[in-house]
Length: 455
Length: 89
Image (cartoon, rainbow over all chains, first blue to last red; front, side, top):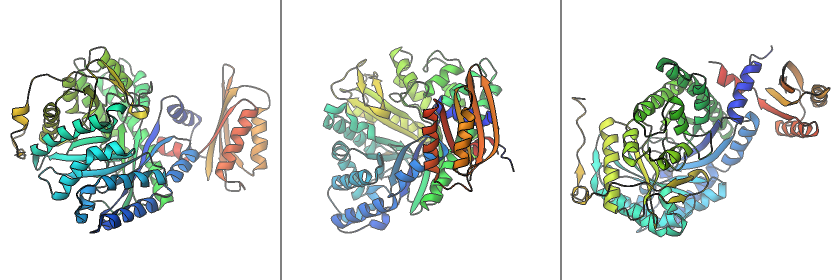
């Protein structure tokens, strides 16, 4: 029988890939490390190295083969592991820096560009192992290249661990200083979360949750350029038109991700987990979430109306994605990083976009304050205050929020800092100069919010 | 396995013939072919069946790319599932 695909459909798909930067952003293999638990640190590290390099041996090659066969770029191949604070707890070690170095070596051996899961979940409190991990984050991320770390400090069901929030401010400052000569790059590999998800394939926040199976394939698809292009066709149309177009486009993008995920799962003989449809921008022109907001009718992101625009974008991305795949998961929605999005960078430079407006946008975007450069002299307490605000938004609104801030050592407002590659470049943004130390340092935990009486 | 071959470039006599000859040499059966010419540019889409093909997909793709370079065309082969999954519910 003659195939059903039409000439026009073939050309549409290939135009999305060739001209509007449609790509599969990442195939991320989740690997459980609890099975490697050992009382001896050396043996634990040998076991995790062995397990990761065995499970992910063919990951990169398989990704490249799929990319070649379907003609769609698969930009990154990555690994997420069980939070190290859990897996390494039995070792009773006083530092996990060597564990991070082991993860880094394993990542290099199999050829993935990032490995996530140097993580701890401390939304209610620390274990001894959590404390060791958190103290190891700054040296670990400074000394390794591909390891990403995250700490979950808040949850809607548990409240906000403010002791941890204050500590995060200190860790971020320490990392910034340790990598002073490299634009404080270590901070770009570290995320603080509220309501962290267990199956997120995107870095720096990916880890393999404890509710997951031994090994799983999650796929992250992107394509802000495709959405932007589709919206050009409905310029001036009403909101129904606008939302319908976003949904249709999200559907098409997600279907490609679903196909790639199923192929990867079958070829690697590893079960498929979820598709994460996130509009994840890159610094390339035509690959920007900000350009979508402008296409909707904003002069720059940050203008009045921006929060509403982000809200409808995020919601309709989810709606289209959910129709396309039964297993949509991760963070699915619109990311609004600054340094990784050319349009956001331009908005900051134009004076349209401030940290406070970004915070408002995070109430309705898929994650949070992401890849924002702030002055190097921002205090640890101020960073903790920013984190606390962002965690409160996530906690009260039952959503994932996150903070990835880079207090760039030696840089001030309006300086530009270059991170390189997908991490992009960013103008340093101003932080409100008034103090919050007496508030954030009260100690203890902000209790869980009431889950009724919603208004 | 079915695949989609696309070729684009400046319209010239005999270019599709060259591709068809290559496909015949590789025992690749053409199921459907359509083309449009916009301005001076040819846009051809072909659905093919690789069931009887002797060579591996990667070698066929490389062969088509090489042929494309010889005749100044961009020729690409892709598994048809990418199109089916995107455009069919």
